[in-house]
Image 1 (cartoon, rainbow, N blue to C red):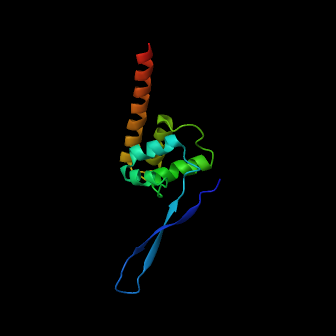
Image 2 (image 1 turned 135 degrees about the vertical axis):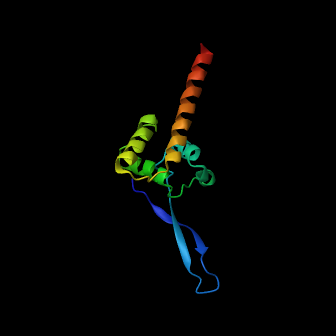
Length: 126
């Protein structure tokens, strides 16, 4: 499955001169990202909430990494703490913060909350 791009919007940079136009490409993730992926991205990246309304996620580094890993077969199940921790470790080893540490921390918090909610539901049935 290929990641496809298309122009999503046009912005005028200078309306008084030659009207320079910049086209911003968005990546359509609907066929790549799972519903759970999108939930994690929205929880970890607050700016992605508006993108979720239209089912289009802009080229956010976190969303991009998940989509690329899925596309390459490196992520086949649900996103979990092990996956996020591996991203954190990769960034630590390379000393490059391609995904904000705060985004990765929020994604871990979201996954922990999901886990806690799951166990609360199970306990309520006992």
